[in-house]
Amino acid sequence: MALLTDLYQLTMAYGHWRGGRHRLPAAAELFFRCGPFRGTFALGAGLAEALRCLRAFRFSAADIAYLRSVLPSTTEDAFFDYLATLDASEVTVSAVPEGSVVFARVPFLQVKGPLLVVQLLETSLLCLVNYASLVATNAARFRLLAGPDMKLMEIGLRRAQGPDGALSASKYSYIGGFDCTSNVLAGKLYGIPVRGTVAHSFIMSFTSLEEVQPRELQPRAGGEPVDLPSVAESWLRRVCELLQTPPEKANRGELAAFVAYAVAFPCDFQGLLDTYCVRRSGLPNFCAVALALHQLGYRAIGVRLDSGDLAWQSKETRRVLRACGAHFQVPWFGTIPIAVSNDISEQSLEEFRREGSEINMIGVGTNLVTCPLQPSLGCVYKLVEVNGSPCLKLTEDEEKMTIPGPKTIYRLYDAAGHPFMDLMALEEEPSPRAGQELAIRILGQLAEISKVVPTTVEPLHRTYFRDGQVCEPLPSLPEVRTHAQTSLSSLNPAHRQLHEPQPYPVAVTERLHHLLTELRQASQ
Image (cartoon, rainbow, N blue to C red):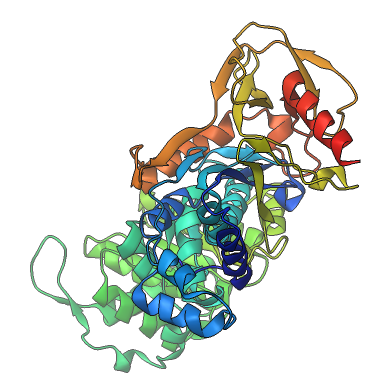
């Protein structure tokens, strides 16, 4: 894992070692500069993987041998001997709990330790946090648009950037609020619920009922097996009569596929309706097979639509299901869940909400796992102190200027329980108190002093890694997911809205602002 880094980290490490600076105490912070997707917030994710990386941080003999082959020939042998002794036992990491809402410029991770090791960890930590937080945030946006009751299924495995990207997408979209994944390996590794329906290829592989084998299905309550294709054909005539559609328009291969699937999975039967014509074929065939199963004591679990005007088709599908349920006296039939897929985006969900729909589950793939609206969160990792001296990256672009010194981060809440500001203070400063008037400077408005009175004050960071070990119990993935939804729900709706949200202020104390001003003046 130590080699999961950029070459220049190692050349800088050699420079520090060569100059005798490698053991100077240092502190760095990991944060992002701008809210992703033109919003205000992100979900911090990847912490557990980052801590796993820290525990495993060391160079093997094979790693050292490889580094000898890529670093300049002038690199001293003693440096390689030194690398062979390195681990993260002198590193301390504090962080926002995984799944928490985080805002631009506020550190998600703070890393302290020997300068050389702190520097070497930069690329690995960025790699583990950047995409994790981005896809968790993207998933959270889909959840906010869908509402709390809609089932969301991640189906991006075949569209993700390789197997590692696919597994990460499944894991972190679950944290962001998705309910399940199609990714079987992710289900095994992370305990995420796995779901699936059936593909068009299965439907298209059948041409007639003669291909269905086996044909018989035993009633759920027991008794003699029944020839399901014959029962389904009988029901098809009755359904088509009700719907006033010609039975010959219902594709026989599709009917055969539905029957074959029903025989294989009588308790989990679901139909993909749009291989041919939804109205004349998919719906009549599905209803016929589902009613045949009902006759034998079984209950279909859903349908899926994968093309066309999904909102309108869902309403038409629901109308037909209710009509069949009422006419054939099967009360549950009108409540069969309707799932949709087909390149679903944020815009799709907005259209579903605007037009109204009867959709119960949405499968999202490409637009979730590839994050096309913003391909990177843009996290950075910056030194803030070396050997007791605060560090400042000074630039004409104030957005890229760093905030010097190790800090304590506080989240300030109003009387309604909504966070209204994050406040950065120097570590040695006393903690602000609830009800105390605070003089602060808001980033982007540093020339002005503002005063705020928080109802509640919450320190954001916990120490998770010390002396080479994880020192804070880590929550399970479902617990992180629950925390993420709680964290999101606490936001003021003005900060949580996805389009043109109200900016969330991040501020510094007067003492931290004074230090910043001093360093800026000294650098001019």
